[in-house]
Amino acid sequence: MGTLTMIEFLSADGVMQGLGSPEEDTSGGFTHGGWGAPFAGGIHRAQGSAEAAATAAYLFGRKTYEKMASFWPLQPDSNPMAAHLNAAPKYVASRTLGLPQWQGTARIEIDRPEVVADLKRQVDGDIALLGSGALARDLLAAGLVDRLRLFVHPLLLGSGTRLFGGLPQPRRLTLSSVTATDLGTICVAYDVGAEIADVTLLPAMEPVTQEVGAGR
Figure (tube, one colour):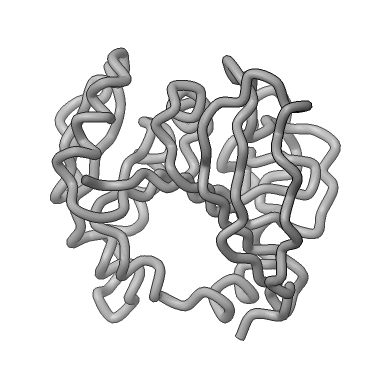
């Protein structure tokens, strides 16, 4: 049985739009594209390629997939991230995408959330959902996300598409790890718990003993 991990890069005020470059996503008149680039080196130094090596498959929405597919297949296998992405099974949730050109990609119908539940039963290991905001929100609302890995950048953008949307019910998150990069990005992982009908009835919290330190 596989697990589904949302891996998301966002500003401190929750914006995920236009991480990589000025022209990446200008929808809604967004003018701050490329905001993640100054912090990328710190994340690479802190995270390395260990997390990628632990990933069994990748899941994308169509827009994220098309951006990734236009870049990573052209990168040399000497780049550990490129080697893993190009070799691993990839799934793209889309009704409109034609025949996927990125080797190892299969298209799935996202109209039916049970398709992703079936995928989790078929994959032995972690399925990484990268970016893909609309898809991520739908799967989180459907209760299909097991883990969040958030890279929160020390930046307030003030505008742009936010990562999180509405949920049928609140959900409890359990902290599993937290570190800080040498450039100030917080790398935090949570396990996603069950729905909570009444947050006032949550049991008393135990102190979290893990310290936040600079990643190396």
